Amino acid sequence: MLRRSAIALTGAVLFGTLASFAGSALSSAAGRQVPVLGRSIGIFVGGRGFGQVHPALIDNGGDPTGRVTGIRWKTWGGPQAVGTGTGWVSGESVAQGSYHTATVVAFDLGHCARKLMYEALTWYFPDQGESFDPKSCEDICTGQYVDLTCLSYRHATQVFVLSHHSGAAIRDVSCDGSTWASGSVVDRNQQPLGEAMFHLTMAGWSVVAVSYGQVTEPPTPNQAAYCRALVQAHAPAELQCGSTAQG
Image (cartoon, rainbow, N blue to C red; front, side, top):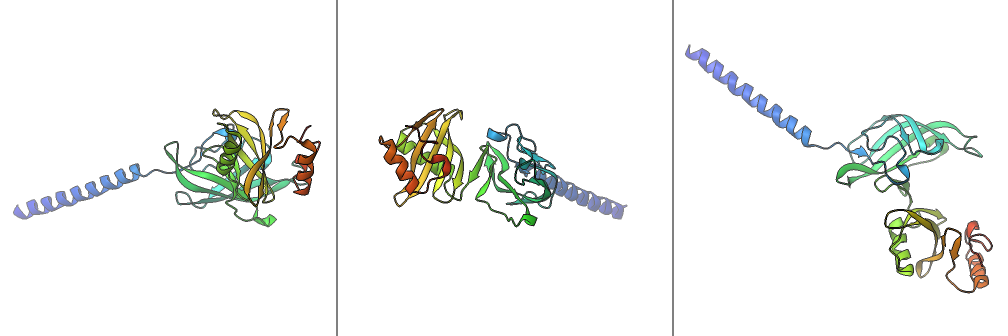
């Protein structure tokens, strides 16, 4: 009888220990956040796959070049999440393209809008000679494209505000080489106002033109001299005289 009681007591203690351990493990698992893939915001507000855990489909909401299907994620939860799927590569035009295997990379793990998520996304096509480039990606926390090969949208906003004393911001910066960049001008409510062109010289980045609708602000009153300066600086084609600059 005494032996049975000892065995019963030992079993009860062991069961209690196991139950306590299991409870702690469940609590730990419940408290550990699983990151999602960004969020539907900005230019990706009509897309699919954002805000989800390892989605099988990512669609930016535009043409086929912004879509990857049948994604199988190899990793998820670490600093980077990597998967493979099928995407569209344009030919001479989008319609003349073809499907290829894409490698999808979600990165910049952090908290955005108080939620753990991958804040950046890109994909590339190894059979096209491409490789992972974090400088060109989608910012899926703020909802815009990012091209850090020239100028970040944060730096562009600082330059724009300093020169125009405006509360506006710059989004969707795209590069033309390493010394020219353009971006969308938006107000405090993220509503589009126009476009801005930036140029990098020895003195740093500066705003060389701002267009609000059909009206363009050149930085100098002498339009002819302004256009000659742009040509000498090898400006992008859309900024040549008679195009963006208007007299």
